[in-house]
Structure formats: C-alpha cells, structure tokens
Length: 472
Image (cartoon, rainbow, N blue to C red; front, top):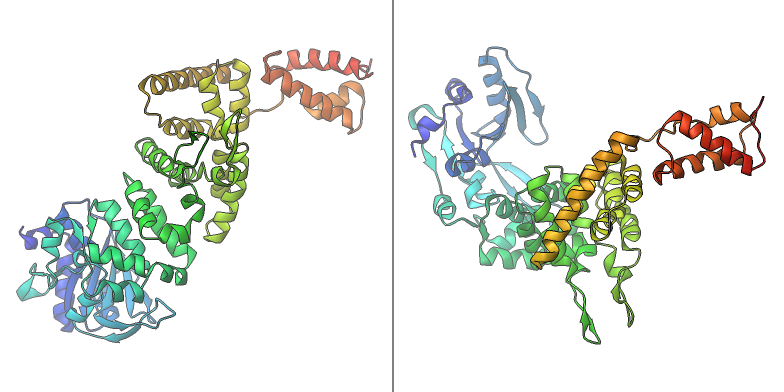
C-alpha cells in the first residue's frame, strides 16, 4: 500500500506545514491508520502525536486553516482538539505512562514516539504514519502490527498481564475490537483478561456501558458476549445473564439453555435494527427466567411472571451500571415486560381483540416489540419456525387492520370524562371512571367502533345500569 497517497485528506498537509514551522515531529496514529490499512470506512476522527507539545501544534494548525477553527485545550491531559470540516482532530504530545494500582489514570511524562507506541493497547493500534516533510507517509510498526492484521489477531504491545492490570478498560476494548473486526484474541491475552477480570471493578459504569454499547452495535454481538462470559467479566458486570447459563433435568425433563438462546436472539435482531436500546431489550428479555424457574409434574419447567420480574431487574441493572434512567430505560423495561405477548398470539388463533390490546399496550413501540419477538424464534424445528413466522405475518396484518379501523396505537377515548360529566350533570366521581373504563374495554373487545356516537350510545346504556340518567 502506498501510504503517502492514502494521506490525501487536506488536513495532513496542513499538519506537516505546522510541524515544520514549529520544529516538532508529528505522526497520525491509532484507529485512523488501522482502519486505513484494513480498508474500513473512514471514521470522522484522527489522532495526532507530536514529539513535543501537542497543544502548540494544534494552535499552529488552527492558525494555518482558512477559518481558524476554535481549539479546545485540555491542559491537565496535555491534549487539544479542533474540528476541520466534518472531522475531529485530536493532538497529544508523545508520552510515557506509569500506573497506580487503584486507578486507571496514569502518571504521565513527556516521551518519545517509541514511548507513546509502547503505551498503546494493541499492536494494531500502535501503527503510525509520519507527517514530517522528509518522511511523509512512512509507516512505523515497532510491534509487527501489520502481521497481526494479516493474521486477524489482537495482541498487546507489551506483557498483556501488565497492560490489562494497568488499565482494566483495555480488557473491554480487546473484546470490543475482536467483535467489531472479527479478530481472535491471542491466547496469552485471553488468559491475562481472565486473570485480571476482578480489576474491572475500578472502572466506572459509564465507561463499561460505552464498551457494551459498542459490542451490542456490531453485526454479531454474541462474539463479544461469549468472550465476556469465558473470561469471567460478564459474571461481574451482568450476573443476571450468566445466571441463565444452566440446564437442569428433573424426571427426564429439561429446559433450554436460556443464556445461549439469549445470544441467538441478540444476533437475530441485529439485521433488523440499529437501535442499541432494542438490542439491549433482546439481551435482557429473559433475565427474569433464572429467579422464576420452577418444576412441577403436570407442567414441567415453568417461568411464570418472568417478564414482569425481568422488567424490575432491568431498572436495578441500569442503576448499578449508571445507565440512563430515562425513557431509554423505560423503553427497555416495556419491551422486556411485553416480550412474550406477540409470541402467545403467534401460537394461538389471532383475534382482533387480542391484537387491539397488544397495540393499545405497546403504543408507538408495537413495531419494535414485533421485531424483538420475531428475533425470539430460535426453534430448530423447521415446521414450528415456519408456523410462528407465518402467524407473525398474520399478527402484523391485523395490526394494520385494527389501526386503520380503530386508531388504537395513540388511543384517545372518543368520549371524555368531561363530556360524560356534562351529559349526566355529575362532578368527578367513581362512576365517571367506571364509564370511561367500560368504553375503553368495549372498543378493545370490538363491541363498538372507536367513534363518538357509538361511545355516546354505549355510555347511555351502561349509565342506566348505574342508576344514572341523562340530563334533559
């Protein structure tokens, strides 16, 4: 590969000029170089290492750019960042690092380019391309990262045990990169992750969730979650999932392994949604099964109420990992709680009233719920698989039909409490609530259409049974 020709983004020539003017060596390093060599899409961020002051280099680059973009300076970290067109460029001075046992924040000193490459997490992220005038485009590959790329393997530049102990977040990053790039993790590296798994506890929930989100956003998240499981990280981070990895047998009856089923559901949903929160719902949809599992002779293995309990567990999990406790959490809860509803419909005769109730309860999230439940079909029986999917098609068609006819998704009662009070000259009372609920149930059951006149006549009849009369 001609790396010189690959550095065609105009920012690189500007950095070269700035480097020359302030007499500082500069290199593009890390993800940009890795993805360039792998032929991956260009990410809109570039990391530049200066052998000297990264902040001074950033300020000079800004001065040379046409619109002189604002430079954000982070003096404590010795870094600076500016935006050029639609690309973020981060500048840092070359440095060497040492670590305290109780923190992943390093003690930083100025260093050489070699020092900076030594501190990188993986050999494929230690590759650097020169931006200096006389050596522009030359590749510096001190750890043979090119060979590791060719062999599709992740290695740490230095001893993996030290690398992961120093900064335990690198364990999550190793698994994330292996999942994103479909690379193997070197055997010694995997052993080091297992050995240092407990060290992950010093990492903030926000950092961990950022990596989990990136794993969930890949084409096949199960790769990452299997690595997390086998190294012991998953049992520390999401024990609700590892609790599903057990199969019991009583009187010759077994239940499926709900852990591996869950990973299959997550992989199944990925081609149909990029929504990371719907993918979280797929990951957590069965977490209530471990604590609700029971056996009796008549029914065999049961998991009664696992969806409801699972919804409660979602909130506790989000709190523990410092995830957002807003509408995103409520959405995941809702999907988990409702996760079996369409499946039950797909197994039985699909009635209009059952579909109305599904749409009423799911509201705007009904399509997401259907996507989740179709991903939940993991049976290896071809006849059952075909039958469930065919029934889901029927459910989807009925959703469209009842929506067109009854507008249930954003349900607004055709007759309001205020109107009922006016008809019968009543003040707010228990009877008003009874009549409103009766109208809603009648519409959901298909007894009356979702229209004012039908609801009005229904209310008159139902009110008569309560001893109420219309005001003359």
